[in-house]
Image 1 (cartoon, one colour):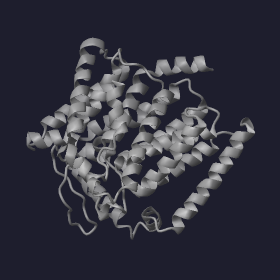
Image 2 (spheres, helix red, strand yellow; image 1 turned 90 degrees about the vertical axis):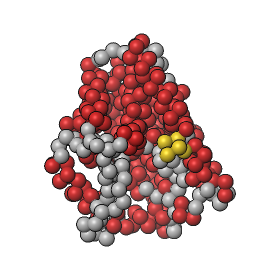
Image 3 (cartoon, one colour; image 1 turned 120 degrees about the vertical axis):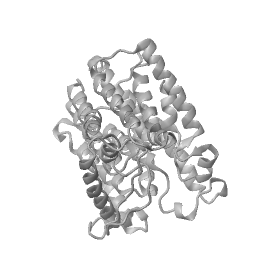
Image 4 (cartoon, helix red, strand yellow; image 1 turned 45 degrees about the horizontal axis):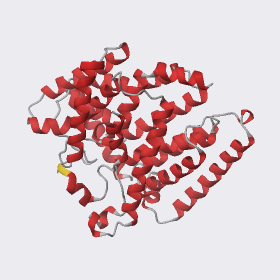
Length: 402
């Protein structure tokens, strides 16, 4: 099971290398690899139901959520092909969740899962680094318009991997060794800069502040205090260098000074206001396959599409308010409660909750990557499954380590 999950973290899905996508793409976001892997995961999920599936109390909300998603699929008059294209990634997400619930699937603690994610994502970064360094090579099909913002939505996972690396450097609890932590931070910063997604960088810096100052200095070793000071100093130098350079992300960061002049923010606000009214009039949702669009601040609408940049708003539009409430509980409330109830240290709980909230904000509120990004949705639903099914395993192993 973990092998198939790893493919979605390891490979740079929907990267800027356009020709690479053409070679494996069938239609839209559907690729040969995604169909193959999805079929394998569905088979594993069905096997779970047959061989190792138990309706535990922790899984009841997800089971209800699945039933609500099915009703949303049946609702609406969109063509069946459009509905499948719209919710195909959700089938993949549920297959991951239930596949990990299988009693034959090797159980992992939160720490083990995070360490594995970091290693796989570092390979993903290295592949993208090769693409970036050879971006003028015609084989990749990277156009001039791609050079300002390079990469893909999968770089948002750097919020988690970078935070885990920083946590390992700044606290006495080591998820990664020192060498892997520094390598991870370098690769993550590379991803933030070339992708020019300001939300990811801002969220990461906010989490970094919490991680760096979460422990009292009196309880730390001198080496840890010095390391924290070096990270703070190095971070300040990096930010100063970034803002003085010609980086596109620096331009976007500086443009956030005024929300009134930031066109992207104004469109997001107009779109949110428009669809909040839509949800109020359609509390049960319009069903999968319903086409949505961004709304310009002058009232005009932009091109129709299946997705919109907010996972919770997307869920409300397609599936309705009850499904969105259940989705919010599963993705936000339940994992936080599970972390709090675990026997991990207070420092770990504080940092893990901060990482999760920041990551969901970046992938679920500012974008729709919880539903539409293969890499991020694979991580999120695997993490939810681990928190749901293996809390007792986490508790036992942490107790033994202590």
